[in-house]
Length: 156
Image (cartoon, rainbow, N blue to C red; front, side, top):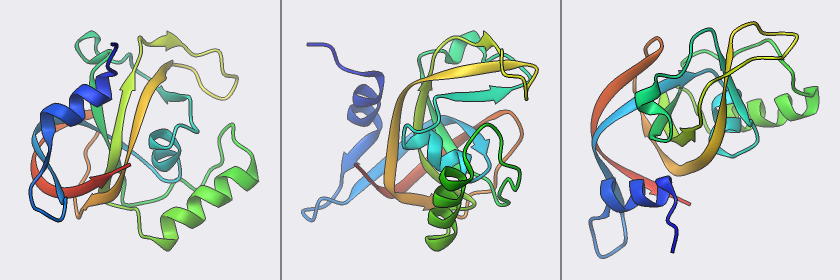
């Protein structure tokens, strides 16, 4: 049986810690800060590529990366319909999905971007996992950064 990278990630780092079934994430992780609403779109499988000016490091291709929703939203709609943008922005604002880790994504190998709106690289999303209880009050950082966590969460 083939298990996905994120199924293995859940088995290794997410534990049931109480009879009520509360889940905890514990370990050291790579994290990528993405502004809303694009952070939500990534972990929900709506956004198929993340665009960056640099390649995804080879050591992280095929590995889980936590997605941190930045403190400020991205007000420019890039290559997405206004309805889709507004739906995910309204969702993020309604439940305050800012300054928190909201899920995990596995990216494939970087590709040169052929998008007319962006010169650089695109990272294809291979798998995504939404946390239904996010890790709150986390300050973000530039590029890919590391964090040690021991925090309650819920996953789908």
